[in-house]
Amino acid sequence: MARIVVLGAALGGLQTALLLAADGHDVIVLERDPHPAPHDPDSAWSRWTRPGIPHLPLARWMQLAEDQLPELVREMTAAGAERTNVVAPEPGLRGRLRADDARFDTLAARRPLLESAATRLAEATGVRIRRGVVCRGFSDPRDGRPPRPPHVTGVETSEGTVTADLVVDCTGRRSRLPSWLRDFGVREVSEESGRRGFAYYGRYFRSPDGALPATTFPLVVEHGSLGLLRIPADHGTYSLCLIIRSDDRELRTLLRDERAWSAAVRLFPGADAWLAGRPITDGVQIMGGLTDRKRNLYDAEQPLVTGVVAVGDAWAYTVPTVGRGLAMSLEHSLALRNALRETCLTDPVDLVTRFAAATNADLARIYRQTTSYTRHRLAEMDAHAAGRPYDHPGWRRARALAHLARQDPDALRVERAAAHLLPGAAEALRAPVVAAAVDRLLHEFEGRMPPGPARPDALKAVAE
Ligand SMILES: Cc1cc2nc3c(=O)[nH]c(=O)nc-3n(C[C@H](O)[C@H](O)[C@H](O)COP(=O)(O)OP(=O)(O)OC[C@H]3O[C@@H](n4cnc5c(N)ncnc54)[C@H](O)[C@@H]3O)c2cc1C
Image 1: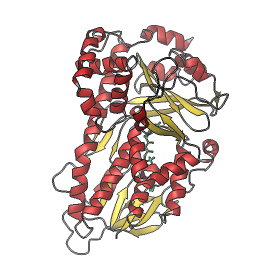
Image 2 (image 1 turned 120 degrees about the horizontal axis):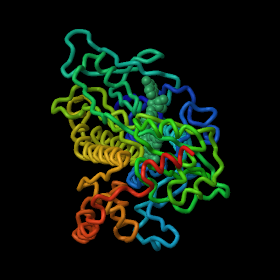
Image 3 (image 1 turned 90 degrees about the horizontal axis):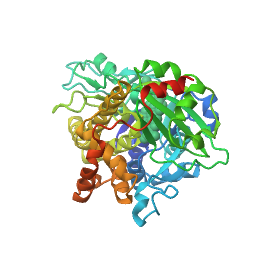
Image 4 (image 1 turned 180 degrees about the vertical axis):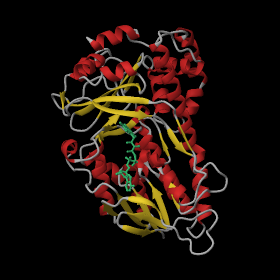
């Protein structure tokens, strides 16, 4: 069994640590932040460095977690995470839940609740978490001829050197891995990232009666050059985030103001129910530069480096609008766990090669699919701002399917299964009956502007 150092004690790092510790590895987690996520998520806003953003992992995450980490799901649920079904009937719209709809279950909660539940479980399982320890790079073992490829034997931290058979980078979307590797002599790491992205203008609420507003799904409503993301969470809390292009100067200036923000939310049908909650944070919280980014660590046939791997967001980050972060990260941790089961650390090249193959097989495809969403949605927002429709055949198909899903319970399940990355979703999408129904709708979407007011009217309503 190996000594494994995981960098980062957020959900990605904790999921990885739990899986590897369960296989008998000696796991140490190093975390920069000196304070753990508070048990009471209400206090996260004032006492914690990271905000208590509501998270709704994909149903894919729930399936994997229930199968591989059932005690994690139990701990999160016991702490108050809400079991939520993403095809749950909306009043009068979608009929009853079916016998096999449990596959659309997931959990909804604010991030500190999820993270503190995972921390409790990890510590109870024997994972050592050292807080207030900042990783600054990798240990250089080179006494004599440097190995090819270079091999990491530990990390340099604010508290000294920590040795490891394997280092797992889970420091998230801001991971400094490429610069650590460059300092270590690995020059070839490249990064691909969207040139442009989205900005979120969010507010967080608690519903007056502790229940969530009725119209919960779809979570994302896209409306011209604005989007609205509604995420339910624990204890009657939820978030409302307006999504704009990060380079949308007009809306960027307007939406900082709470009244303008509320006016923009009211452009969406059913918004009043969501705005009826009591705000639990001050002002509008802004998060910019949200785009997809992937490190080309695992694309080469020959590993660039051994002794270190990047898992989850530290490898590939996808826009939060699609909610894929936790599902991709758990899938990636499982790929690492499996690669470790198949090989031993005395052959570090074999380990990284196996992990690379698993990463490139499924996760890289999901990443590419997300970048396609981002590209098309940005183009649609641009077109809307310029007063013209965005007419791309693939995008038109996606729009037609989403429309069909709002009318037909079978299509709803096909569309949700694809959005939630459930097994068999791709085959279901290709089924002749679904393809034919989408084909019949396609002409309706030709040259159609996205729903909602024209850009000048929307700007006027927000500015008033
Ligand atoms: C607004 C928003 C909404 C989201 N909504 C969803 C959602 O609904 N569903 C979903 O599945 N995903 C969502 N995500 C994505 C999700 O948050 C991430 O995928 C998830 O948190 C996993 O991230 P991680 O643990 O890999 O990294 P992070 O959460 O970024 O954590 C990295 C950790 O590493 C630590 N660290 C950083 N640098 C160092 C260092 N040098 N040394 C030591 N420690 C270090 C940090 O302190 C932190 O604890 C959302 C993201 C955002 C921004």
